[in-house]
Amino acid sequence: MIRFILIRLLQAIPVLLIISVVTFAMVRTAPGGPFDQEVKMQDEVKAAIEAHYGLDKSAIEQYFVWLGNALQGDLGPSFKYPNRSVHELIGDAFPVSLELGIWAMLVALTLGVGAGLIASTRPNTSRDYLPMSIAMFGICIPRFVMGPLLILVFSIYLQWYNSSGWFFASDRVLPALTMGIYYAAYVARLTRGGMLEVLGQDYIRTARAKGADEKRIIFKHAFKGGMRPVVSFFGPAMANLLAGSFIVESIFQIPGLGRYFIMAAFNRDYFLIQGTVMTYAVLIIVLNLLADILLVWLSPRLRFD
Image 1 (cartoon, one colour):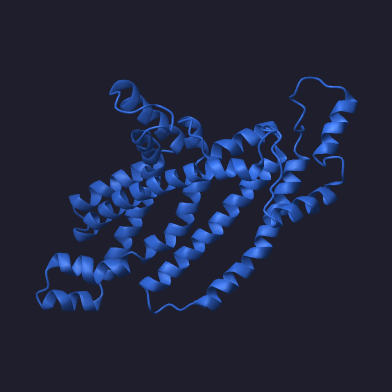
Image 2 (tube, rainbow, N blue to C red):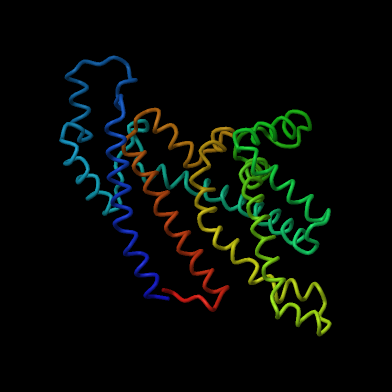
């Protein structure tokens, strides 16, 4: 396992370098600059500001300066927030996005696994068709539609929750549902397929022939093997939950990393864009690695190759 982890971490190094180069090039080649939307300033003043941030150097020099500082833990200053550095902004916003992603994943696993188990125990019946139809409904509705619908129902009509903010425990409910319902639909279908495959195995029929209780068969004998497709989906899904929170954080005015990323893109905040992209890239690599380790633990026949 240690060899497997080390190899994966070494493979991540060129991936991160490529992501950093592509992000740097795309940001620099995009039209506009970080100070174009400011109050009209003299050319000498603008040149002095650009020299202060190192923007007067060539693109290659700027990249290697940023890379050297990043390897030392310095992601550079923010143009929009001149009194704060990028790593300070990420340090404040990332826990919010992480908490939102965890709550959304709990929603997805709770609803998805529950619906998948119900459907797999009675295939091709109403107990199968109903949850799978609801799952398909959840897949078809994008998050930028689900969010306003939940606000309309639970915030405006019923007035159960706030429509925006991140101050109280109840403020987590609607954003978590907005993000979690979409992935709950995928988890439900994966759970159903995985459980149906395992429940058709010979050792399950043997357990039934010996008179084992159905709950014991499902949760002791079949559940661990049936969850393998869900675990394979878990790593990319969790990464997408965190990296795909831009829209949800904007809809509900959540001070997370996705909201900072959108503001940085509009303001051409080069260092903040670079820092948030690299943070998401590292997070995706780590989550996929954890999912692979968990998958091998669930299936001893697999090996760390």
